[in-house]
Length: 330
Picture (cartoon, one colour):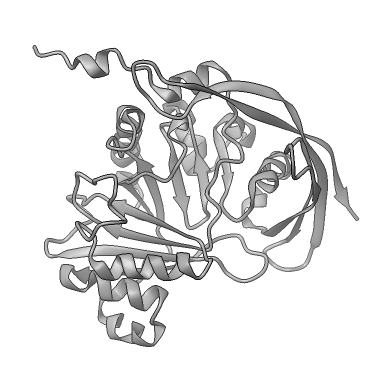
């Protein structure tokens, strides 16, 4: 049997992160919209820069957002023998609603390969052309999409640890639930937290995922506190807001996921990033109760982590935070 010497001597960044106790909270990607496109593997690292395999229209749509100062998270998902149709590709677009919200708004399409670029432009830059794609629109707003990073071309930890979690989720969870799909996806940051996944439409990010917590994560039953060390944060909030929101979720329990929320940093140490005062406003899904939490997030020290797997990865110091004086406002 041939031995892969490179992998045999590889120190995986996610193992270093876990061993050193790095907390993944605050590492979720906060964006206004997602553009998710089915594309065959392997995915090259510059997949969103060069027009192969993505059409030029996709790159133009993304550049339109970036040049305008907006935020978009672009992801590729791998074809699936049950979900996919030859000659067609799934395209998902999620947009953040205005104001307080609980989930991103989803549009889903199954389009001919040749029309992916034009659809991307219609979704992001040329909405007047969107009616042209109504024949391809899919009614999948009821379907929850779990995307597991397996993008080994970016970092070996993503494929090494991501694929087994993807396989378990796909075979044991999605296969028995028509309202759930699980996909292999391209890199979305934080490979030191592999295996990592994003849960849409809610926009939760997870890291250091272990098989034993999948029942709680997927079915949302049991003690929410079991998810505490795996939660990277909610994409509807910024860094310090994400750290605060996790503590509130632990207090409020599962009902918190249905509440519409928004956050703001009231004041912070902008130079050293040692503290921030945060407010999270929320309203219940029926609109009958509106309130807020306020807290201070403060530096509690640091740990060493690695941003990249390899034989001798460079270790970097990263701050860790805790929430103090969390109070519910009247």
